[in-house]
Image 1 (cartoon, one colour):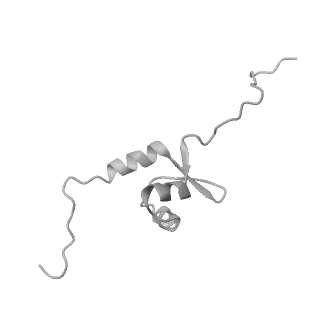
Image 2 (cartoon, one colour):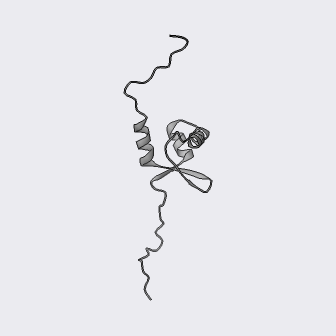
Image 3 (cartoon, helix red, strand yellow):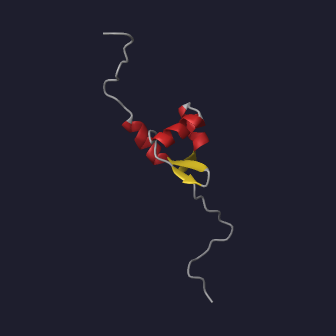
Length: 82
């Protein structure tokens, strides 16, 4: 009997090659994991996928989100009355 799909012996699948964990992303961005969790709850940060209790971010989606944050003229927050 033949198998329907060829199976390569001892070749591990790298299912998360294009994904980054919340902790890894927080370290890359200089943020805390709690900040990313808060953004996830408020739907403010980059899109993520949850697998069990862990959150993962697709690298390309994070890259796109960072590009979307760019502002031509940053808004200056003034103090006090104008």
